[in-house]
Image (cartoon, rainbow over all chains, first blue to last red; front, side, top):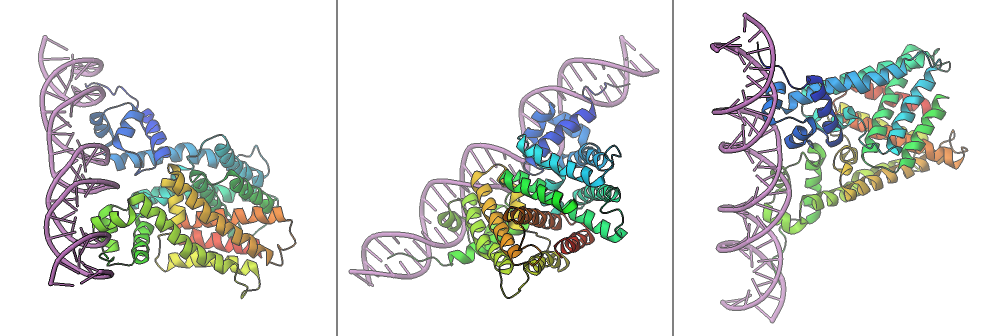
Length: 193
Length: 193
DNA sequence: AACATAGGGAACCAATCGGTACAAAACACA
DNA sequence: TGTGTTTTGTACCGATTGGTTCCCTATGTT
């Protein structure tokens, strides 16, 4: 018994995600978001309360998209060797850069930014990176070289790989020479081989 | 034949560094800086032109302090095994967190932030990380396990270690569970051993 | 047709942003 | 002690920040 939304909420979140992804949380202004989402102030605030709430929605969306894609890749039994799955993920991150996508990872950008001061954002970041870490652990279980390691060692290695991931994607944003990223990825390959 | 500065420029830069270190570039407002540096708008703009110029000065200062400290640690021949020097650096980063310092690395925070849009800042970040990478390479030359590797492989490994460093310090800022950082560091230790 | 709720758009808000103008004060040198 | 030069402090600037409020219109349901 009321007028329906003229936009799908998820679409708006998706578009907001693109804006935050490129500009970061603090760097994305309201006008940026309004333009990117294709709606006006009134609609935005009615639908999402405020900027931070929108950002939390976006982080959830990102978890459901990019993070989930990573988890799927890492646990994809179609690739029998887990180390290969991990390498695929790192290689993808590197290729994104050579393809011109220097936005890095929304989670990693948020990690360096607002999560320092905001508990809810920090928690969302932790949650996303934790999911990736667990998926890394699963992948290692499917790696001939690592499957017989003690559980602790595998878990530690997964943490290291996440840290590697965060570093790689953060440097991508900083426009570090692509060589450095490629070298890092190659070295991860050597280490896992 | 004029009135002299009432503050030492380097002192002011040092204080500005502290502010930028905790708040990041965009997160540090002029009032934040003025209070932290203990001077007024007029003095700041006369001495440093504008915020960005000040930040570039700060980055230089950071290179001369923190980065140089890292380079010194990595190339310190007092510790004969280069791998030990590298581990000392990672262990220090972890201990900073357990000691309550969650600011991470100014360079890494800048990497995720303004270096995306500003060439000069991006270049300064690259320069600092490059210096650390080279020092990592030097340390590896002094590691029994790595000194006989081909030059390329060592260089690649150095890139990976830098990426690891950036990841670690970025996650520190994000208030990721310290366990994750400790695990990552331990795993680096295993890898280098 | 009437009602309830939604969106759309603009006007408006106080606060803050980085930055500037300028007068007064403080020093070095003669 | 003057004189000239620079610093310092403050008032002020326009622009932008995130956020609110309003009214009008559109579109469902009953």
